[in-house]
Length: 153
Image (cartoon, rainbow, N blue to C red; front, side, top):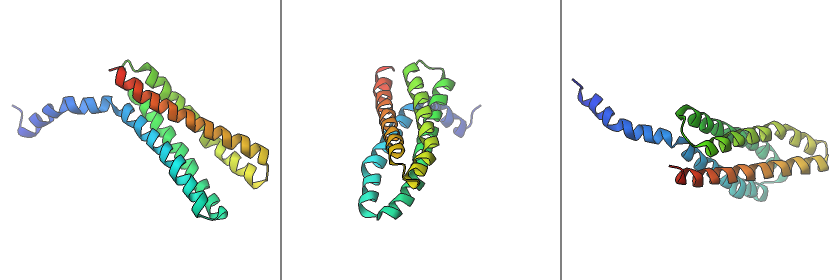
């Protein structure tokens, strides 16, 4: 005989499983929000409100963490889709691509900083532009995942 707590958990189980199934959708929304918030609000505000030396210190601190957080969230999304063995193949590939792309951004961040420190403006511009474009691609992949997820239920 089941007690009250066990019965309650059995009633909640389908809802919990449904929430777990949608973790990649939630992660895509979080990634989209993070990218928009960081790129449209934080970075411009820091560059406008803080002197360039302090802004440089802050941005060098925050950007690697930004790339790493999105990479780890993308990996979690990918692994969740694999674990569930569902038919969200496009979302799986988008999550894997986002993980790889954000890992690349994380890896090249010290190179960007070094280019700036050594006044290698040409290299700095190329690498900085690369991280901007890669981040934009990850934003598009996250939005496409949200759209695809909705229509592939």
